[in-house]
Image (cartoon, rainbow, N blue to C red; front, side):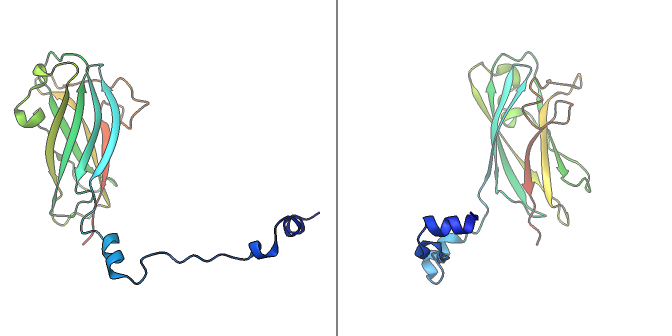
Length: 185
């Protein structure tokens, strides 16, 4: 027996007709205002990158969640301290065009605005680090990749990524924190 014949026998004809549902908010201006936003909400990402069993990158937010050429975005990163760090590391941040068309922007910095060096971090703490990225005017990127990790400027050494299969990385202990969409004006 053909499937359509079987359906006709099992399901009443009144239930086989098409069903059209109108989406809410079509003509009410108040409902439309609730659906329109003036700014893309922050991007929030979870990560889990483990650096030498000493620091775990827990997650981050980027505000706003889309950046336009000439504008800045605020990045907040959260690190869980697993073991004491014997060296004062900088946090390196490489901002790159997702298509590789623009020159890399570096946003390397001391953690927590220089107020809390890594040698003072205590196991069990979650350290908040904030920094800004600025997209130059005239940039024609579709999206920006934010790569980051820990770097010791005197030895040029990086804290090594212990779980490269668990997070996006480039194989050189540089993790892809997030891809930020670029608004074209």
